[in-house]
Image 1 (tube, one colour):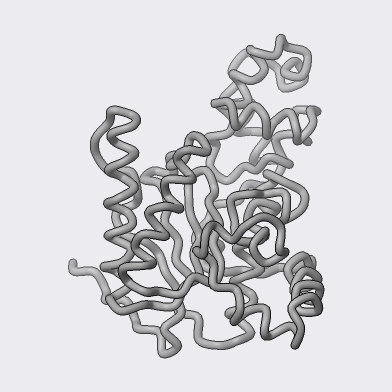
Image 2: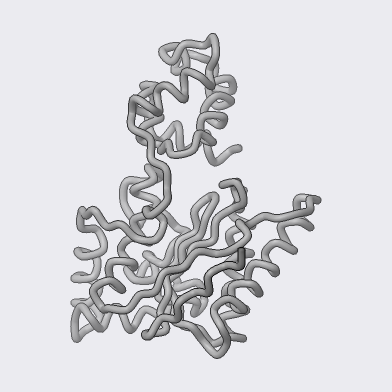
Length: 261
């Protein structure tokens, strides 16, 4: 059956998500993330799209952009092919890295536009990777907060900040309050993402550990504990906070183990 054509956004603005095939990691280190941002910047210059927000997670990417001088599908194909070429060369592998088709939703109103900006920036917090949005360096949040650069012109932040104040300092202050507000925002990913309850997560961990008891994990030698943590990481629908809570270890320890894998 042929795929249903994407409905064009009347505003030209889209929330886009690229996910690793079978939810595999697409970034293994900072070099990978920098390379993807380089690809994004390169084709931003070619297609002349506008980028309002972005976030790189371990196995997926969120972008909020306005379509440029070519079809969105063509732009995303260029970006994906460029990064996959680098990835396959670096890791001496072949085959698909991303899911066959990127996901997108139309962003038609100002209210939802701002909701998506906040959702993208809060993605690492809600995934349990960090406790504050500004702690995650691989998103556009720092660019909005005037902390560090804006990835060498990658981010187009004026449209957003102008909605929050006439002066830049006031706009940043008011945007920061909005961006960090507790919410139940549900955007593109939440439409199909599996989320485990603590009970379900505990059952999955028990199944994975086999004869090892959950209570034993925190007392294991560091290398052995990290070995199990890395395996637990790939349980679909689990998050860092759940892992730390169930195993009785700190979120920092879990996060560190994840990023040495």
